Length: 272
Image 1 (tube, helix red, strand yellow):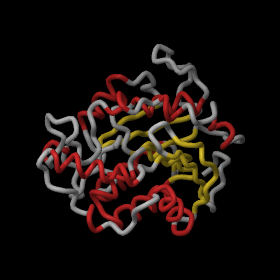
Image 2 (cartoon, helix red, strand yellow):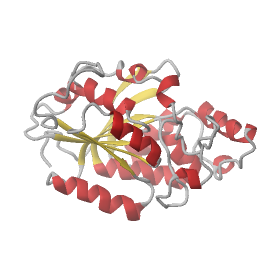
Image 3 (cartoon, one colour):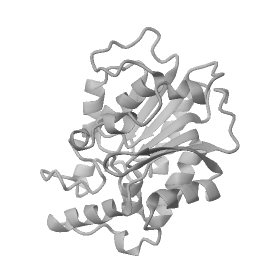
């Protein structure tokens, strides 16, 4: 429920497409304005080993590139950055000298208001970039990501983050959309950290919309991929997207698994 995803393939702000409006529960793309208050970043990042990137990329000879899809207002993105690099987890910590030498992180969300908040509050402006982007709109996505990667002479990201995103893609774009989304991330990233929402969250999201008198999610009743979503997403990534499950870091207190995948054809040495 962290990110926002559009269903029309356009980059219009969700306010013009049946957005959350003034109701905090009305966020059909997951663009909750205060998400980090009810699912704090510490509950996720504490499951990850400190300095994880150095163990995944022991021979990295250049800055690593990361992609965070559905970053909301950026609190979790910043916490992930600090944890993965083993930095002090304090908002008052200054940006280290030479920031960006170890990791440059591109964070995107469909909601421009959330992105503006992220940009204004980021303690690491030299190494974390925030951008408003509908990841399901290939016409906007492909040139944008290509342009970012070309700045570093790269064609892919070293690591991707998909934190409480999959349900919103699935509800708004259906089974085909979920399959396409996972295939996209697998093609873009050497490693992929996924936090899938369990099926009970789908039902809760649908109930919230109905209570507010909104139309139901277009695809909710026709989804065939359902049940154990962590298992389904693992199966899709490993059987259809040429990735392997490297590690499960356990579950958050609100019952979400943190799963790390690796591309089976990639060389994780920090060389493209």
